[in-house]
Image 1: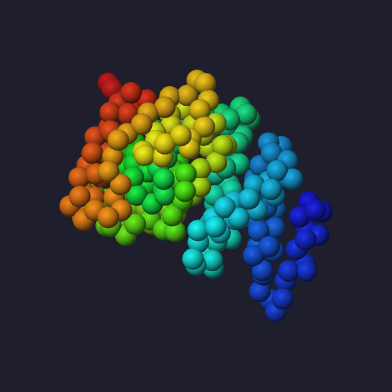
Image 2: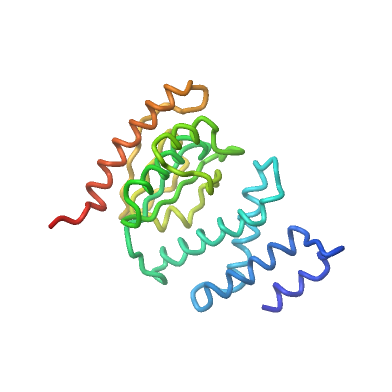
Length: 223
């Protein structure tokens, strides 16, 4: 871990860690977690790339290092899955919209709520926004779907490669196409600019789509 450790000490001042120092420590933790699966250089690259990608749209940067570690961890898992280094226990579903602040977040939250551990869900945006729309959080709270730990994330090649089903929602040709994957395009209104009743209608339409999808890829066991 010498490359990671060498870049750390110069960034510590007054007991507080700079973003670089926090990211180096995140890379150390993730390198341990993915030891024997992904090499240290790749881990560090993904951590710093993830931070840079999230920083492009973030207005509040205090939580960025922690969010970047979470984002990088999921990307590394996707990378390992796509290369067959980690088995997929359940189907992988990726929801993609433009800003990852409305439709794709609603779809991901509703899928988690309905499917539980029968699927693994990711979401991303071709041009991620600054935050999840407050009205989206509101209408999801009404049905018990939680997005409190979520945040807009950029679309990356690794999560597309890892997905079994890729669901797009108004993001055009931004999502790369790979053979052997299932691609669906759901035509839904963008919640941004809609009133709360309009967003509720979008939410309910998404739920119908999700229920149909899950019936196909992760049906509930019978008998």
